[in-house]
Length: 506
Image (tube, rainbow, N blue to C red; front, side, top):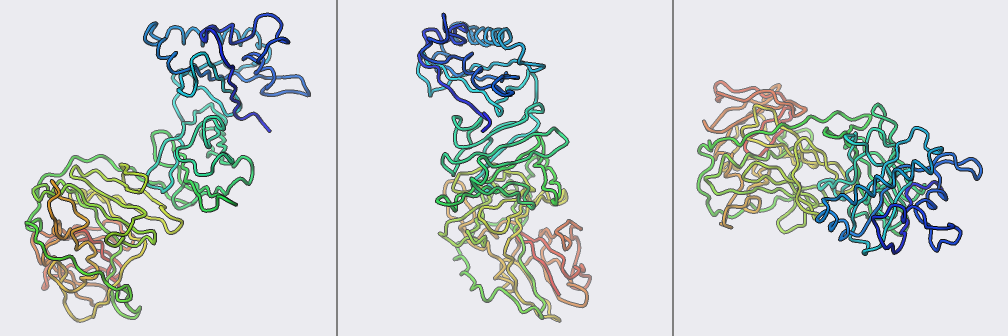
């Protein structure tokens, strides 16, 4: 099997900064009690023909006890560490010059708490790469257990061919945080240059399954056998750019930072009442027969809380259960999405909270993906993102009649799923009431089903209404609209009011 990563501890050394002592023992190597650096490189060549080495490894990481590295930094500003790396480079070039070809010799000396003073550990192999001075990463590799909290694993540089990631730095070139598969197996990343995607392989072959999810663009690594059920998500991103899309996916846009909007709450941000939260709606009442006209809740709009700071709102959080339906009160959430008083978005899971930006896709369980959509610039004053619900909720409506939607309207009350105190947190732990008090008027708009679509009328002068098409793409901000001069919303299109993204179907 190729030497992807080789770790060796040289044992006790009187002077860990003496390059000659680390390189080769004095006298005949035959009588040396332990192999030193030169011997290790001779015994594990990069390439060989028969028993004769033809190339040697040239990128070597040297690890010393952290205390010794710190002492050197305090006393000599790191001069002994630099001299050690330079001296070993010179010895390497002198003794293995005929096995280097055009390869650069690079040494890196680092500290680790895993070693005691006097111990030295070396690491080299096909998957060990030290970047040249000024070389910038081409890719970054990140992993997650829930698709919400992502942690950096390693960079991949333009001239780096291989990287091996796994349980710890002893078994791979880079350790994966919360690696779920024990010491069995690792993931090999192969870089064929900037014009080719990173190739991903499992080592040893068959240790676990590794499949690219074309929708999200990340890999799903799942265990076999005794560890079945464990999984890891991995994504490879262009350094400083959006994730590399799957072959059939669409490139993700980049959300640009926006200054917090000023206070303009209108009459929808009124003092909170203490009305009890609405009772949960039975699931068999939320789906209309296909033959009837219906309105569906397909998404939730996360507001810019900075607009409502005078209400004391400091955060709003929406959780999804493992079924990816809205989590009930007290139910553990597989993933949650939050926005704070500074309008920062967060993904929330059992692993913690992590800032995120829209658009983004998450797969917190082995089920349907959860999409967080960016909002159009015309909506950015009021909203930070749109959360597309994996399981829309529908309610039937009758044609030929005009209905109202709002906090006090009974029609479509089953769709106002945030009409509860549990989604909103106030400063100082004060009691809150319905989250609908932010952004949704008591009577927001009227709607009437008719031939070819719905007639929309504005019932509150301060209620913001937005028209999105059948693909949730922004169409227009709805201005003046009344029962006499309604705004015509085509069937299958969407209306955003308050926190709700509603689809109107014929």
